[in-house]
Amino acid sequence: MFGIAIHGGAGTLPRAELDAGRERSYRAGLAAALEAGRAILAGGGSSLDAVERAVVLLEEDPLFNAGRGAVFTWEGRNELDAAIMEGAGRRAGAVCGVRHVRNPVVLARTVMEHSDYVMLSGEGAEEFALVQGIALVPNEHFRTEERWRQLERIRAGDPRVSPLTISHVGTVGAVALDSAGHLAAATSTGGMTGKRWGRIGDSPIIGAGTYADDRSCAVSATGHGESFIRAAVAHEIGARMRLAGQSLDDAVHGVVTVELGGMRAEGGVIAIDRGGRVVTAFTSEGMFRGSVVAGGDPQIAIYR
Amino acid sequence: MFGIAIHGGAGTLPRAELDAGRERSYRAGLAAALEAGRAILAGGGSSLDAVERAVVLLEEDPLFNAGRGAVFTWEGRNELDAAIMEGAGRRAGAVCGVRHVRNPVVLARTVMEHSDYVMLSGEGAEEFALVQGIALVPNEHFRTEERWRQLERIRAGDPRVSPLTISHVGTVGAVALDSAGHLAAATSTGGMTGKRWGRIGDSPIIGAGTYADDRSCAVSATGHGESFIRAAVAHEIGARMRLAGQSLDDAVHGVVTVELGGMRAEGGVIAIDRGGRVVTAFTSEGMFRGSVVAGGDPQIAIYR
Image (cartoon, rainbow over all chains, first blue to last red; front, side, top):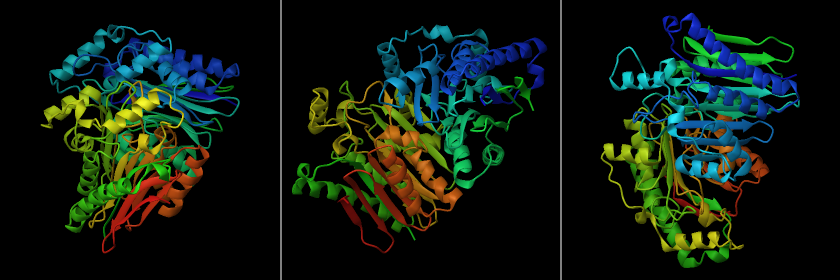
């Protein structure tokens, strides 16, 4: 048994803003990332390799808000956050506020495997990247014109856009179960369009946007990060399974629909348990997502 | 009913390194911070005000690893992390990697109350401080000669010192219950002597080193931050009470003694529940700590 689920962001997304061609492009990007992860798992690879690879492909795809195509800060820069965690030993790595790392999820894994630390930030994290032989790229690498226009609209106070519109919060992530029975989760993001003051969201916070524990499940979140931090969403879902005996389904829906819904927090999560059951839930109108389990067909979806 | 508990760090601490005069100074510092928090609570003030005030006093005391007297990074700077959270609405604020903020816990509260964010980092957090009228101080403000000598010993690879020795990880924190029945927690630290690459520990991570929830308890942690992040210690303790019906005592000891002990993680936590019960636990030889409840005498302790 193995399985993987991925997401490419949740938030409000009027159908009118997603024409057929654009929707095809999003679906193709999700399908490619999902297949890359699936192939690793089908070949007996680890869930850690699978989630890292899937997230790398989403970071490389300019449609998603991670790596190239990340949203801009208020000052017009790209500042990236990412985390990865494996459920067997609950080892974890995370980076935040990096500006010159092409694949933040790869650096997060390097932090986990080649440092004594869990979380590195800013220029220090980039110094560590260089020490580890990871080349830096110019901040320009992440720039897309569409994201720039979104920043200009936010800066101009355009009432039709909100920092919580899906195009402004489309974090990416993956969760997987491998054939050895181990879980893993990874998340990567550019954060929120127009974010200021070195804001860090939930994605790189172990327990908020990312968590994996072989005793329960692996979770990756996307949405209004501040609420996800306050509710410790990713850790809470596993805690409900482990401590209250809830199913993955009940735990995910209880946290996302009831708890985050009660906080009026937009967003969602993907989660997978040790049985390979995948559950997705979101409070928003849409969430880019996909999943596939051993012997099944890949599922890609955007709306409910 | 009200109560407050504080800590000034946990770790290994050979009694030989703490002579009588020095021990008196530590006890006096803890007593002053505890009394400041107690006085606020006795006057009907909020738990949020009490934990902030207690932590400010510990930040001002050069004996503790927070604010003035913080440990040095590998590069010889002071980089400070702090967080605060209130249990009624589960609002939270945190800052990490700040170098010029005299009282990081005050900035964390300002983030919580005067921004749309939960966590701000580095120079951005300092820009926010200035916007909010908080004056910056030179990095030199935090310097003490003792901390500098500790860095020099770490850099020289002195085998008698470890980055996990208490003097190198002595985070401060406070948890409180106010007479309105609301909980709050706050934590502040300079991190680990010789930390590199913009390392962020558990203190500013909501759910790891700091958490408060009126449904369960308020927790502040100190110790080997990486393990505390991986186990989501502060959130886990409340989750065990809320989801598994455990007492504060069972939850704290289960997480600290069993879980962190199993990870061979040095450190400890202070916690308080809605009934004003205070529980402290640590895996290390000592932990600077104190507590007082309405109508009781203040308790200050260092060893078991």
